[in-house]
Length: 272
Image (cartoon, rainbow, N blue to C red; front, side, top):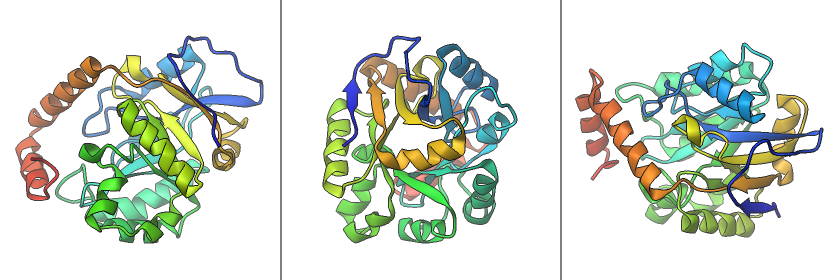
């Protein structure tokens, strides 16, 4: 089972030469609720000495931009939200695979609301089988933010259908400790490897949760994510989480199509 340490990370963090420290869940300004430019993310990663997986909501421009440089390790990824509101993470060996997945699966179903695609959860999982990817379940017990447990409890997904999920996000920086502990227990029950990420939207969040994994290139990291890498880090404070949620709401309502998106989310039952 993965070695998980709930502690604040003090940088620089010593690691073995063959190991990489990677924040496997960060967002750029290309997410509907993100604020950081790709350059800001890369500068932060360089300062801390870590790699990143820029997993924007139904978007890959941030990961695409970051892939053009070679100094910071970038694990290609995306966070996809289906029409019922469940979130899934997808990681790829290289950026071309991510591009193909985005063009063939996400883009054709990304219509009225950039935050969700018009696919149900089982169909997305089925379509993902065409690609060499790792499927992760982010913040699985945060039921207000797309945790997969809500889909299981409501019958939108069968327990047997979760077998295709490769990774459980056991430590999410925006989840509560109780939610993360439930995720750890679920991963043990499912016998699935675990990962961790900050789910960072602001600069000081990036690198607050990292996964320690072997690999000198993204392809090696991709393979070794399945080998129960170590996780360390700590959740954001309730005050910071509240501040981030306010910023997210302001960004949304200030968009030209903000009211349209809000209305769509209410109609889908994604907002109370």
